[in-house]
Length: 638
Image (cartoon, rainbow, N blue to C red; front, side, top):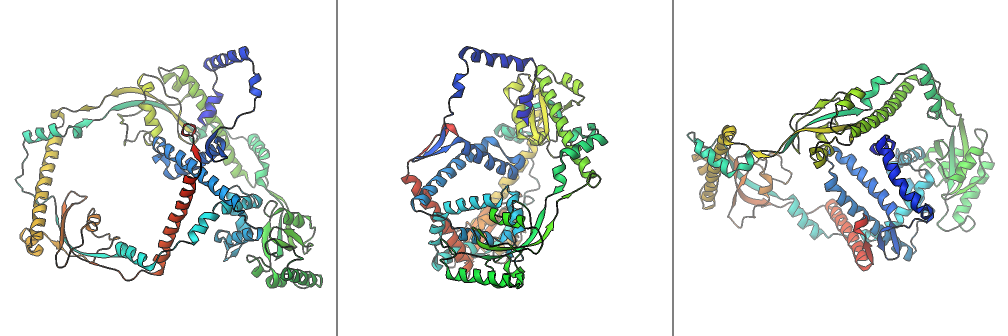
């Protein structure tokens, strides 16, 4: 979107750039522009080059996926370098697997591909393959059946070697038991909590104590670097009330988008599939030929199509339903099937046998559902919503483009921009680099302070120098231009300004030291043979004796569970004792009495461990292939 604004930017600056670019062309001519573009690889695997176009396509897809998952938590400085390395390494591994497949003549037959598709639970309804579901699912990803089959065939070929390695990997019951003992054993403990209230009542902190704490912990009393901003914000949703909807405009919109309100012709159909063994023709397969002739003869004799489908069809998804495929539109089926189906003229007509990659089909046309068009009045509300959204976006582009141009021409102020466009100029309070203060009270959640791009721009040298920012996109069709109006450096606040804070922090530190000292002393006494119960009772504390603790325990005080499972296993009649700092500032004294091992590992754990081994082994094979190959990655081209 921002690029579109820049591309459409007009004014004397743009004309100046055009003139500067035009001068070299006038001098050297444009003959060199007919030279073919040289493909620059980002990596080479032996004789295979991985070109930048494919790398960039895969990188952008991966980046978009991660951004959608993390939303405003996505930090380009942190994630982009990692993603670039991940993508190029993935392409290198794919190249290695492709070479392996070609060298070993690995391919996926049509029958195997059909079985894979029909066995996929995401394409099934009520436990059987449903073509409508298949078509809908792959359509959401931008595939037609032909394109999806090509994609799936390529993916299966590339994953052949990893699948072969995984199939040969397994875990023994002994290995599973050791893992199970580690993961599922329980620990018998006793513990006492020494809270922050367990401290002398007369623990007074003087101002000298507070000043001493202030002097040794000045980072706690630092006010961070801060700025104040003013900004202009424009969004498509914010401009919606400027859109005027007229009857003529609405009817033009209806005509321009009429294809949205048309349901193309569909055909209900059924089929009987006679599958062919891999690499064989009908004449070379006695079983398939016998079924083919039986179906052909019985259909000619007028026998019931649905019953013959149940008896003979090799399509597991439709056979039990009498061959019913439901409603089919163009582009849903493989081409030979589609051509035959849409060539039939009347319901009840049965085609001649049709050969596809799945085998031979006998197709029956069950119903023709004519092309339908919704009227203007039927979709009026949808038209109004669509038109308003379209015009809001168009208006947004115009206004944001004009805002960018005016801001560029008035670098020392946003006031002329605000007045010219009728957009209110808003201001913020003091903001830090990691701001947690609300800046914009907006209906949506895309606030300025939540957008890392805004804060990065706000603290840039350019804005510190007094310039307006470029448009910063904070959401789809939603941008701001910001300007720094005040700045103050990071500074340690004077003691007189933070005396109360220093007193509080010094007292908290003294209490913490006191209760830790007591907790350590209590643990030493227990470790030395003292009775945990008696020692706790003497000091008015409570000894907790919970049920045996597993790694998934949720009842222990926050921060205690990890330490429980770090404690050494006691030998003989001894106990292990430790002190742990808890999340609320208190301390826990823990005594580990014994551990309880689980029963033998079950088959599910054996399978899970085998899967882990298999994944590790598959990756090891690919890593070994990479080490043996001549792989060059051009880091400067990523």
